[in-house]
Image (tube, rainbow, N blue to C red; front, side):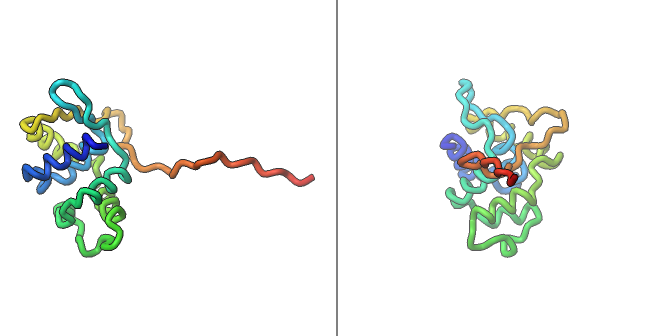
Length: 145
């Protein structure tokens, strides 16, 4: 997760986040990010992890306006929910997001990052958040006789 934080920070510092939010979400969620020497920076994260990371890094909340979201209408008090909603509205598995991610991947090469290809075209969507894992398996209910 620290590697992804460094990647997002580099993208933000070089002004590549503005205009590329759909592509940035697509890359962070579904693509492999590595260094030129092959060291893996990130193999993808869930929507929830990305939302939490954007919240922690205090990403500019006005960037969501480029994906058609009104920053004032998203959850103002809960920043994780704010970014989660923004990711949902951005549709990171859309063709628009893929093409934007391809352009962004070419731009981050100069920053020392190699972005892998998109997920397989088998029609399988990008990993979406699943149900929360249970700490203990549910016990079967006893039947009355």
